[in-house]
Image 1 (tube, rainbow, N blue to C red):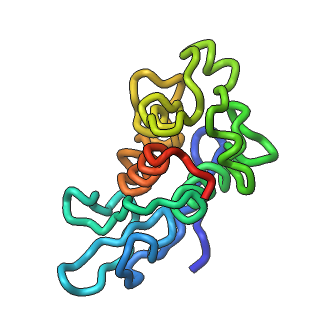
Image 2 (spheres, rainbow, N blue to C red; image 1 turned 180 degrees about the vertical axis):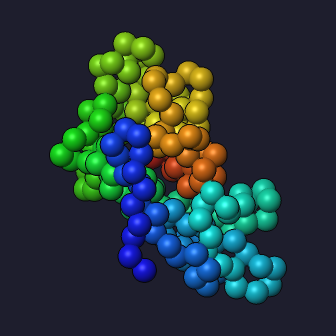
Length: 179
């Protein structure tokens, strides 16, 4: 199916790719923004992440072996760069989340000057410390974030796509490797 683009009030767009009901066995079988939801002993199906269930509720969102290139970059690509907000041509907050080079622009890097003025001395990604990483704070809607939650939707990533947020959090917790 062709991607359908949703326009957001900020002028950004978010791709709403439709892989719903695609058969899957593991979380990686469903491209972001979809997650694999198991059906007992049968194969699971891909559902939009906001309809998926977290691992604590019996879903198949696997965060044990998170790879940046396979699990995290696709989230940034679909939710952050395709609408233009954090693309190379117009990086909001001085943050380009398009591949290649995303990890080097995140890990131990300062936030934008405006964000740093609002919440000083918090880097974009602090390896091993999700709650000391601004990207985690903004996508979890932590009150210690600067400015708006991300993505620019009514809810933070942790609410609209719990599996995607869990993968981002796991990647940071694993030391934010460039893998």
